[in-house]
Length: 447
Image (cartoon, rainbow, N blue to C red):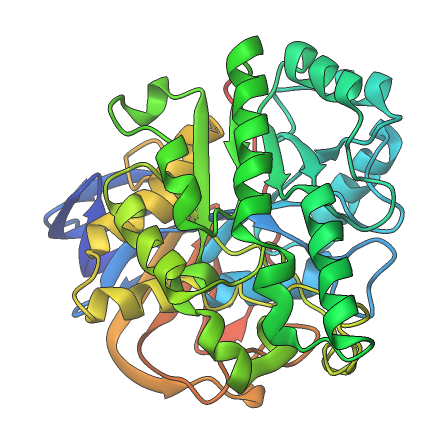
């Protein structure tokens, strides 16, 4: 598909901690000029007056459920939701069915992405106690990372063998992304809850079962392993005040060997919201008490946490409505609304637009060493979001693009909305519609 040329006129360009009113020229997929005024004949001109012009969001943690779980989602459907919300690139997790534990299965996901994704894409290789040889064959230049579940997971992806962990941390040459919850702690807490409540455990017990102590124990182990072997470690979805002190902010992000991610739902909700939303906000690691939520944003602002993501993990409404605590799955759909939730914090005076861009666009590109993404610099791939701060709208089923058709944000009124999204130089979302003919690019890595 020919990418052509696009000229974005008169928007407020936010890039590298600064903002300025400027024009931005896109040619053949790349940003070629960013200047105060550009006069050029192009295939398409977009008037961005009064709007913010942002780099496309890079989400380093999503679950798009394909293959095997496509009644919940698929790569094509969730990529559509992503671009409607300003996410132009995603990195998708391996706990599908079957789990992505071989190079053959990994290649198949890349084939699906190339055929169906309107957003740019990459896929994690999965780790288990039994696939060490396959994991070691992963190409660092073409895959975002290796995912290790150091806590409960679906399928056979829990890695709890000490020898396997030592080998992975000592020999894997690419970024290791970890889900950190201690399995023994979870089982002990679950047994205590069952003894107290029998078969009627309320969802309000979720943060007690998947406790802060379990998170801290597992994160501490991952960091110990990474330091011992000088591994490149990225700990996903930090959810507790207890873990903040594990991370440092005294060196630049480019020099960090251990980095951390925080997710939009842990910044938005606290344990009191279970009374209102129930299983709709049940996720792993759990949304916890307010003092935990309150500690997360300051750690993001002072750079102990490096990246904002979603852990987008859709389940059907029927699956979430199950009354049995152990049957109702953890996870919630968020990739369409992550930028909206962060801009909501900006409107409350809690974070700047420049910091949002740093943590959702620049920092993921730096952390994962993504080639020519994450910035609005000349020579970069043109992943661009035009965001209208004046639009007010309400999240409702008719504007939700997730395959499952629901969101825990339903009924929430938001100020500001993505107006256009450009993916690798192609207009992928405009006029409230995803352009299904657009295809994203496979992400490449400078390693």
